[in-house]
Image (cartoon, rainbow, N blue to C red; front, side):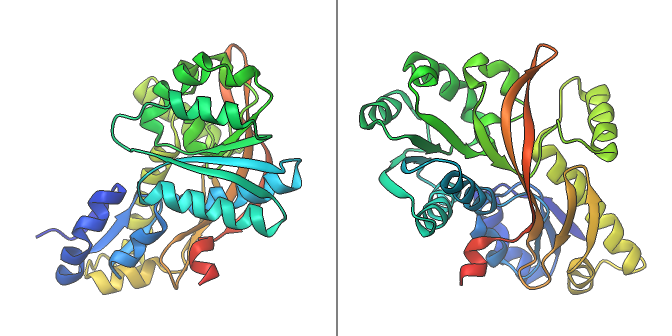
Length: 296
């Protein structure tokens, strides 16, 4: 009998939420970034990230750091539309103007015509989101359309400059500003040890997906200690609610009401250090909850 489930990209998690509820199995969501995910089952607890967290903070930072006219470009799926919503809400609340909102298909995207459209509109800033797996396509077409030298500031959630793909994306990413919960360059003793061990085992640097899994296993371990090894779903979820610990990404906790991750969000800039591209953190927002649930 399955006692605990872990993993869950957004479509998968939403698909098995009802089954998990019926079976009363504690499920740690280690990958999904959609706000809606934890509403799919009272047995879901999230250790991954929430796109609305980073997008909301990105909207605040942009409005307070010179952005006035913004075009948004996101994929047409739940995480993309939630990222767009969170950014637009916060940016607009602080006086910014959304010039246009563009959505593109999730499957087999061709960014080129949409990037050209952004260049033709010529806003001062473009907020862009897409899954990290599409980073290579974006980087190539971003360079081809000359946006790196257009004067348009490109910002977005951390998927835009995923640690795992960043060095393959090229120097056109230099200076790009993103908001995210984790960077392999995060300056803490715990993270330096985590990065060292991860690279030794895998020959590449960790990213936000890997740290979601790391923290998910930590949460399961600590919850089992609290329940003295008992694995009934209600007991495990109760043990996880309100738990707080230090992660390679910083101090984080589980919101006892939503079962969502509460964590620091960092503003980062792509810089070249010792010949490699890194997301260097330069601002921090502590204890960020899911703004789309807080707003309700």
